[in-house]
Length: 322
Figure (cartoon, rainbow, N blue to C red):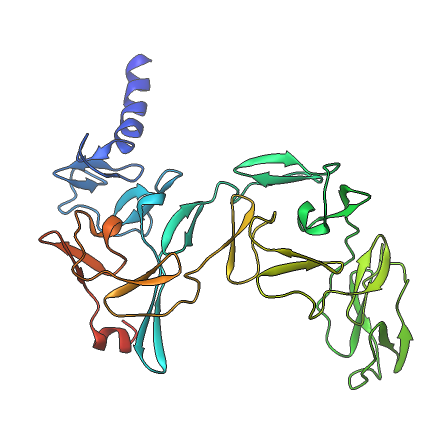
């Protein structure tokens, strides 16, 4: 019994050791072992694993060239400017619960975490939000509103994706003839060819139409349209800076939802020339930078030769999309 337990535990322990042991920066994937600075899935394997498909790293690690590195130590994603009018995007994986943020992989402890109604994930834990003191609606996250100074569950109307010839009613797309080319003013929507006032309609079981939103069970005109400056969020006419706002799964571009908060990603969509990469919103020269490890000290698409970062992409490769 003891021998069987040891045989079961040894591979798991070995898979979490650095490779090479003690001095290595990476780990071997699960069900692999370290030998001669490389990771092998079987003693019969001639060459170390050098690919990331079908290999599994433990949480908090991401695969590069067949080995598992700490997520926060890796560089990621590049938007390379090929000429005046063209660019090439290089997308990289940051592993399970990892996101590319400001050119670096960052652990998102709320990725995949489900919280019950009235709670939001923060730093990996579900935190009670309902009943919390608040100043504006956005303080309560996307599923709650701020009323009377406290966060309360919002009324979520049914959502449909209907064609112009249909209308959403109680979560279903129903025929709505005569409205495909009818335009109604704010607060009105087309019903069977005529514009109908939708302000004040019950939205507990139905959807709001005509650019209106559901507020405390009634349809109201959305006061946020064109109201807030850039990098601000708006709920029920209230504007707040996006940074630090609670979120679930995503935030408007160029923000990322990490650890349950919206964070400005300065490298989202940022173009940099060959030999450079985006770090914290700025294009930084990487070629010839001093390095020990290309994945940590350089950027994706580089190698470390003679302690200097060397660009692997050529202008021809990038222009052809390789």
